[in-house]
Image 1 (tube, rainbow, N blue to C red):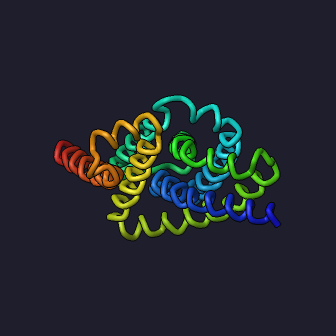
Image 2: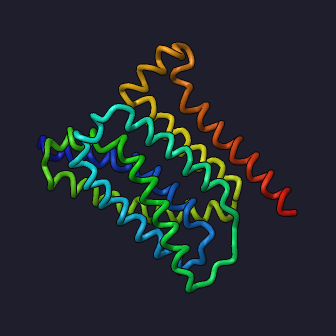
Length: 221
């Protein structure tokens, strides 16, 4: 019975993380033609899940490094900013570098976001490989089908791209606060607005990305 509860807890953690994965995959693949998009979603989702399983086993060592999560949070902000700036382009069906670029973006973002979650999974599973693999594998369909749904929304309502970038910015801010060294520093620096830090970063990403996109558009015309 205890194993079942542990599995359910791991599933919940993975499902929460899968929401972020779906947003990243959707943003990275939104401008690809349908055949390429399907390949990108599958490769991105499978790669993300495998990466998360591997990271779980090294989590205890990785998360002991001071400021690692804070640096990861900054990197996630940069990825959100870059995804926001990408313009829609005509893409040839045989243009594999575009697929590889999208998959690389997905894996890079997932690697960073996973740093914030794998410690909890490793701790819950108590080193049980079967629990980790089963719990993580169940998140694959959520990532794949969730990504396809979000891609359709992004194409119909482009304004949602800003929301997606904001979500990644917020996640980056949370990662930075969860870093023991950086979080302690921020709580002393901003005792009142400490909890608002992720929200402020999300707003910053949206405003900075929107301003840069508008500036690029003016320079091109």
